[in-house]
Image (cartoon, rainbow over all chains, first blue to last red; front, side, top):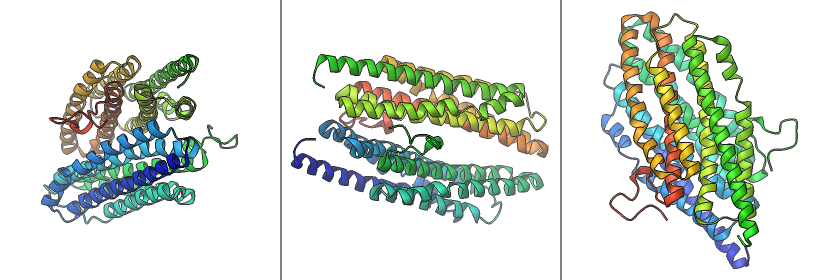
Length: 231
Length: 231
């Protein structure tokens, strides 16, 4: 990057990109929230709205990918700026998948509400708010380049995994006691897996943040006990 | 990119990167194949080898991400070359996830073989070879910049979805008839979902290939009936 003018433009564009990514994260999170609300309230209209509501996210996905390409091509950024744009490309993909998972949750919810309720839903809404918070924190960490917050997201991933296992064990008991619960219990098991995957996407984002800021690769425990990361 | 020397170096590095991505794809595919072979043969040793066998893929994942950054920083490629590197970043992520899914399949298989077999496994190996072929074709399409092959991968995705639905329906019948099959049948349902997701990753790669070659975005039916894509 040559002139200070050029640098200023790049930084403005980067800020704008971050703002749009936050917006996209907000939309994805809202889709997850509404899908689980539709499940808990047994609200078919809401569930159908979530299933038909992926257009804004898909449009943002394409727009943001385009912005990233333009930034790479026009400004040829280096070091942390380059890593920020590549991180944005990946985060964009993660957020689009979160939107898809919200739809998967809504689809399984539509199946679920066609049967009598298996049980009072407590752990699934808990998983959902946890996953949503992880996602929000991961995106905040990206925007603020906050590796401490990103690390906290990584540390929290086990909570979702434990909740998923707990839900699984409990539902198996229901299924064994009453075969009439098999189909709806299966829907809940799949929903808990979708929520766990939302947490995985938050974790991906947090890993990208740490790499962006420190050029240190925390995936696969890279560099543990050896030289730091890949750069 | 300035001199022809510079251009030549970039093209050499890009070819090398493609070769490494193919290698990684081969490893990921082999992990999937072995996980499903372990399931079908009820071979616990093989299953455990798959579960413990993600190191080479993880190392390649980190190495290839590093190569992509270096290529972007040193050569500042434009147009189709820029799109190729960004596609490589995404494909690298997809292949690493395929490796994770192979481990998920092996973990569910380990649970499955702890019970009596539910049924003769026919559709799951069929799903697996189909998903492996989609992955191979998508990677070949990337290396050869072959949009026709990439489009074929996109067209094939429904086959996996249909097989998954068929497996699901059949296993529900087993579970309803004999509660003793609930737990192992659940493992098979989860395995079929993991295989479907491998097909999704092949689809992602195929979409990236089409965008790389034609700068045309085929995701979310972008540009249908309007101007092409996002560029």
